[in-house]
Image 1 (cartoon, rainbow, N blue to C red):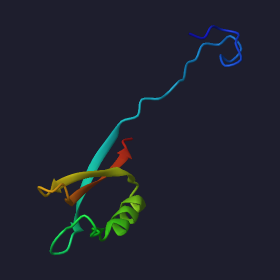
Image 2 (cartoon, helix red, strand yellow; image 1 turned 90 degrees about the vertical axis):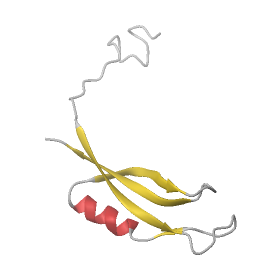
Image 3 (tube, rainbow, N blue to C red; image 1 turned 45 degrees about the vertical axis):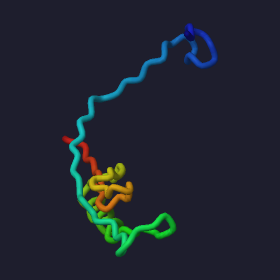
Length: 90
């Protein structure tokens, strides 16, 4: 535990940050992952349209925060993903 006066303590001031309360809202857009006819370990999957969706959402004030696998085949191959976007509420 750091005590006041140390080099990392801000000269005797305790470590505190003042943060305003921020509330976010989230939205999701599902995209399909093209896997072709048969998916083998050496085959590649390809998503289409994700960049356009991210750019369109950014213009509307949304921030892309990640993706979540939404639908998987029995082999573990992801065939649909949800793109996650957040926006700060006023």
